[in-house]
Length: 91
Image (cartoon, rainbow, N blue to C red; front, side):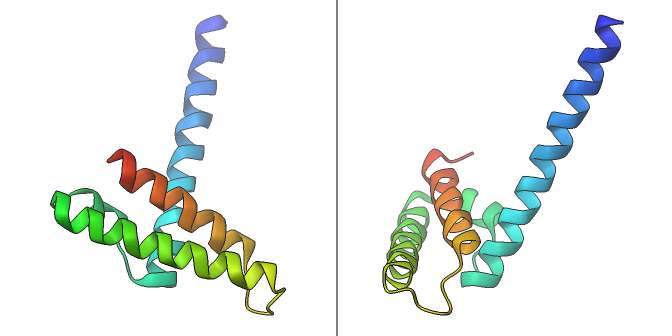
């Protein structure tokens, strides 16, 4: 039974990871037109340019949030931060 339980847990984690990656990919592409797989496979100079762009977009979201702007979206803010972390790690 332990093996079956382990396989179920592995399946759930894998499915959650795939869902999270799909959510991040869609949010990032809709927010700023950057495709994560392309960003991760880009050259170091290109990844640095993408990193700077993501930092600028995060800062804009932060400003909108602090001013309680109607277009602020916490989910977009989180997705941008997660994408920035992934590009920095290069995974």
